Length: 316
Image (cartoon, rainbow, N blue to C red; front, side, top):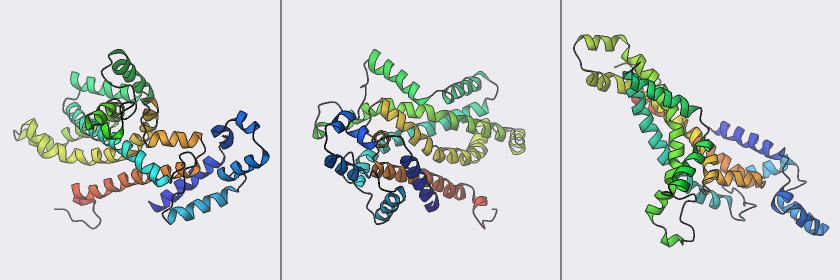
């Protein structure tokens, strides 16, 4: 994980360094720059790190980061850690809901489709999953926004809280209401992958020799699924579920932009367009920790669910 995080940090910094975006023009504007004196422009260039060699800026950032200092956001003019803390709290609230919904529904739909291979319900679930898998998240977000927020007007258009309401006046119901559309968008796009893989694994299990033997002994389909199906299908499902953290993070960037949801994804876009290197690198590292952490948790759970996978484990 440490090596991967270092590699991600270096790659991100290189991409930022070769970006064609001029931080002064992006954040101040060409007209404002034209009316400034040479001394003022020089101070701004020093503030944004223009002219400083890239390797010096990277090692300076890395040294501070390992000391626990992520730097100061150039756009928010606050410590990066404070900005990420606020934005991450909003994103985690949204992504956790979407992650749980997509995992549970996808797992159930995959089992139902697998045990009804070739029937109408299997074809319907498979068709739905293939359709959603090829549907861009931003397009789906726009459709849901247009239907439920504009036409029906039963859900808010965007943001995470009502407009014009002080923080003390925001209720938990308000937060849930504003999170419904973005969470549903992320959930719908995340269901298909888990559903399709769970379906394939369930079909494989239902056609296995030990299931055929169980049927010959007179076991019901319910008992076969409970005793043989769920435990065997949980391993790939958990793999996909924790692996989908990266997809949830990636999808949240576009979804948060469309719904103007003040989360980590929207902050990453703002930092990228504004050449806020400390903030963008901080978000990148934190996101990488979550993604790689999800894969690590999946590997640990392997051994809990299936003891044969543990190193040195013995068959029971």
